[in-house]
Length: 352
Image (cartoon, rainbow, N blue to C red; front, side, top):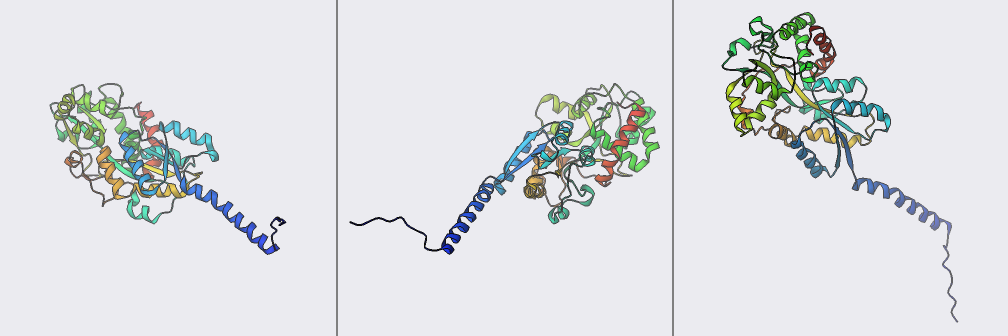
C-alpha cells in the first residue's frame, strides 16, 4: 500500500523566497488598480455645455477619468475652504482674474512648475499658482442710430456729460466689471478711476441689472445708447440665426476701447492645481492639455474665446470678423490684486 505524504518545504531559504514573492504581488495589486482607475476631480465654474468635449478629449488622450462638480464661483470656493485637507478636488476652473485671485488669496492653490506651460502661456497671462487658458475682450457696444463711434473710443469716454442717460451696465460687483476697474486703477490711478466711475454712474440710463447679453439687447432696442460687454456674448449673437438676434446685431456697432492708450481690457478664463490635490500629477497633465493646440482651438470654436497660445488655430469666422486689436498687456496677477480696491472705489462712487 502506497502512503500519500503531505508536501513539506525543503528549506528556510525557499520559504523566504515564497514570502517575498507574495509580498511583491500584494504590493503590485493596488498599483495596478490605481493605473486602471486613474482619475481627476475638477471643480468648475465654467457653465458651458461646449466644454464637455474638452473633458472627453482629455480622457481619450490620457485614459484619465474626469469627475466634475459644477457650481457657482463663491459656492465652490466656500466648499473648498470647508473641505480643507479632506477635499477630493484637484483643479479649480473659473472665469475672470478677480475670481482666481480670491481663491489664491485664501491659499487654495499650490505652485505649479511646468516647462510646457511656461513656454506656451504668455508670462502676462499666468502667475506662479494659476494659468489663463482663454481670453475675451471687454468692448464698447453702441446704438448706431443714437451715437457715433467717435464719441465712445475709450472707457473713460463713458463718463462724459454728453452721454447722460445713455449708459446701460450690469452690476459693478460682477467680476467682469471689477477686473475692468482694476485695469483702470492700474493705468490711471485710484483718484482718476473713482472720478471716472462717478461720471459713469451719473450717465446711467437705469439701475444696473442683467448680464452682458441683456445690455446688448437694451442698446439695440434704444433703451440706452451704449454699454460694455465681453466679446463672446457678442459672437454668440452673431452666430445666432434667430431673427431678433440678427436684428440686434445690425443695430449696434462695436468699438475696441483705448487703442491709442493702454489697449482694450482682456478678461480671462483660467485654472490652478489645488493645495490638497490628491492627484497632482494628473492635475498638471490636465493644465498642460488645456494649453495644447487642440484644446486651445476648441476654446475658440466652442465658446467664442481667443486662445492664449499663439500657435493655436482659430476656426470661427464670426470671432475672426471682429478683427485685430491692441490688447491691454497688464499682467493678470496685478489685475487680480487690484480687484478688491476696484470694489471699494465702485462702492464709494455708487456703482452697485
